[in-house]
Length: 195
Length: 286
Image 1 (cartoon, one colour):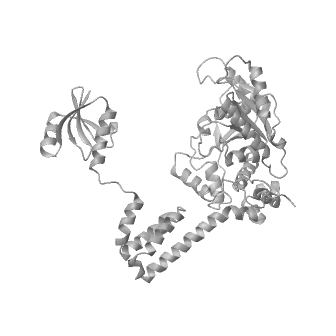
Image 2 (image 1 turned 180 degrees about the vertical axis):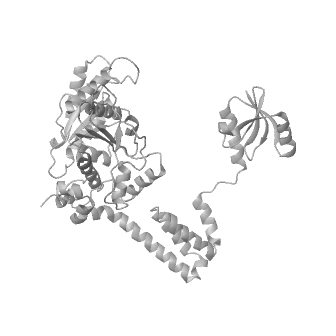
Image 3 (image 1 turned 90 degrees about the horizontal axis):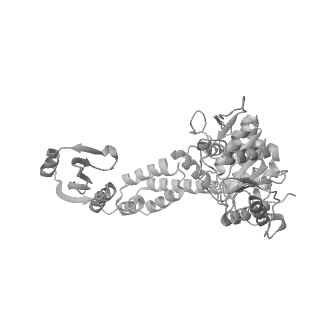
């Protein structure tokens, strides 16, 4: 039987008595984050560090950690998705903040091929008052939207391009083109009959 | 180089293990082998055939295709992993593994997602097409196949196909393969699923000039129960798998299957019937 003798619910830290020994457990609740302590440490935690003395028993470590995790969650601010947080903050974004967003779109989203999220974000930025009065921001957003469109088109065209141009196919896959014939291979990949 | 694809409709049929055992038998018999993992969304061949140097990082089908298709590196290096083949052979031929990639790394899934984004590994039919074409990425896999042949000149390329009905499975079985070793669990669901796949294979076009795919059935008896004898089970399986196709073109040409007995695991003792069956399969494929 495990007994929680003191707890700081919002942090998930707790002192636990297990077989007559006292342990401090804390997130992330791995074996390494469990340390044996003395009675004096527990007493000081309660008197000086805001731990609440308690006397709750648990049948297993799983139940106990579930209880501690629940405590952390209930004290945490309601979780918002990244997009929801962004939506709430965007209307208040100053020109400088918009500039930072654009930097991140350019350096993170576009190189990762995340064109759709990038486009959604750019369209929202485009509607901001702070952008309307700054032509250079407007110009940059429009340019990035153009990059998104071009990249999306390239992605959709990649498959078409490869199978419609025997010369390109021969350049990209020279050994396969040599074995099957570039034109015949292109036709095969297009699903069209010869002739 | 002969390309043999190992396919099973359902997971857990022992496809990877059988491929690995066959690869080792072939190598011990003096036949050089490259084993390639095309089960890109559930890779694992490198666990059965671990490279001696112990790494899959930067070495895999996904890395290679990505380099060619996305990074435009026409001369991407093909870096196969040599596999140890312990046994009683004096001088086994080399056995290499080409894993799907380092599936524990972020870059593996990132690169696979990039290939997905460009629809390189999924096919689709549109107006004006005489048949459903393979995905465009098949071109890169055909290139990879040729590259393996040119660079290593192995006697055999053994391909681990994804299970189920997938575009990549269609490439593995109908585009790349000369022979498909089709593992069929002796269960109703295993047989029914395999039958559909065999019909599907019958309707897929082969690359220009390529002959028909030879199908080698392997009946897995993990779930076999009397009263049928093994011979009856094998005959019933062939009968079932051969029947029911709507189009004659889809009817597969099937020969009696090789029966694969239960895999006893890696316990000590004499050579198990399972390993004997794998050896027999390797002999047939030679």
